[in-house]
Each structure stands twice: as C-alpha cells, then as structure tokens.
Image 1 (tube, rainbow, N blue to C red):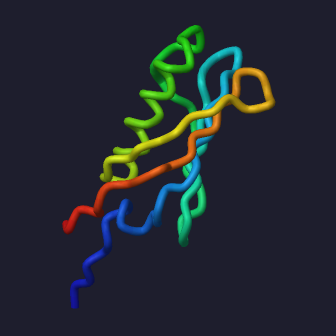
Image 2: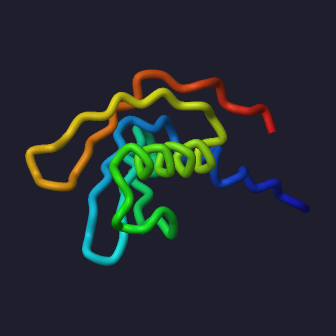
Length: 98
C-alpha cells in the first residue's frame, strides 16, 4: 500500500513575519509561519554581508516565496536593533494545487 506524502511546502502554514539581520560574515533570516511548521531559518548565501538592506530584503522575499510557492507582499520596517529588519506579510497569493 503506497502512501502519498505531501510536498514540504504544503505543511508550512501561512508565512506571517520575516526577520533579517546582518552578521559579520553574512545575512541571516527567519521566516515565521502560522500553523504547524513554526519557523524556517538560516543564512543567505547571496548577497554578501556588505549589501544594502533593500537588496537583501528582495533576496529573502524570493527565498520565502520559494519556501511557500506563493507570491508574498511584505512590508519592511527597521528594528530597534542595528542591522535588523522585520517584514510583516501583508498578503499572500493562493496555494498551488499540486
């Protein structure tokens, strides 16, 4: 009896908040989801840590859209911490069927 596993992105839930911060070596991120998955985090391979926040915010948005397979609209604001940015997901596209 074969079982069909759901694709990983079907188990993630809805993205709610993106956190982006610079370290000496690279940019790090966390994507927080409502629902069962909780959080996805890691380091961005590109762009380099010397890149400006607008470039890195676009890179993280692209990564979050790859995670969820949905188009996202994110509103960014600077955090109280230096070199930290918080993105609130304002809207997300529909989930793909497959």
